[in-house]
Length: 345
Ligand code: DAH
Image (cartoon, rainbow, N blue to C red; front, top):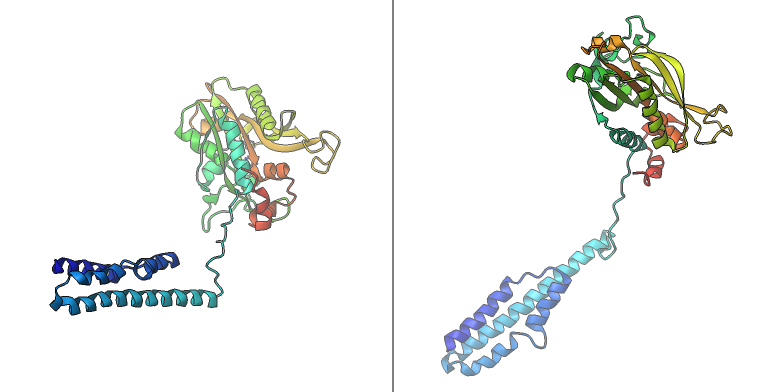
């Protein structure tokens, strides 16, 4: 009988020794359990009645030591809690204050517009093709029918890699046309978004790096009418259902015939404004029927296949859509500017 009671008291002593409350609440619970008015140590004193006389002294000492252990531990815990509170308040930290909320990021307007363009074209069966920014002369110029003496090849416009007449930073995403045509058999229906580089003086209207989306569709019997309808669909999805397009004859080495595409001014709707420079039309892209020579350069039978291509600057679309009047804003990462696009997706 005595032994069992001794064991019970020793168990409580162990419990007290092993307890490791940390928070204020846990420490308070420890106090209630071992030192409160209905604590678990108090009834142990009553057990002395069942202890044999010769053991009573030893038993009393043991129960007292449990009580003392609980008191000491509680004091220690309280002291360390106070020390922690003092340290944090001396560091100016209010641990009861609500935490700081993390600022939510937003997509960059270039990404927003790029994703929009990708969505519009993937809906009608185009797939996305991406390729390298460091390109060789052949894919950027040669395959694209840009003769040796074409002004676009001038060192002024192109960033060549150091000590290389061959490797360059691509000047347009048309280089992806050559890459895809070399690897894939028609039908081909791709858009190629990406960054391009030109050795231009940086100003409000031009930058040495910008983004383009290239489109390419090659199959049997692809016609200029297909091109026009595809671009009308794009313009209306991008700028509103009432948008009209106008094609003006133009020249690109890689297309024949070539055209530049204008959309009706979605800002003034024909009244005249400084976005359309009072012409009611705003240029958005270049396009044309892929020159048969380009098909042949890339191993595609130009007797059997025809195709159309187009290319547009993404900065231009973003600037029009959001009325941004300085291209440099798109590259400066100024948080005051970028914050304004939080509502965009
Ligand atoms: N590569 C041209 C540029 O950078 C844009 C372009 C025009 C691409 C007509 C095309 C096209 O595919 O058919 O200015």
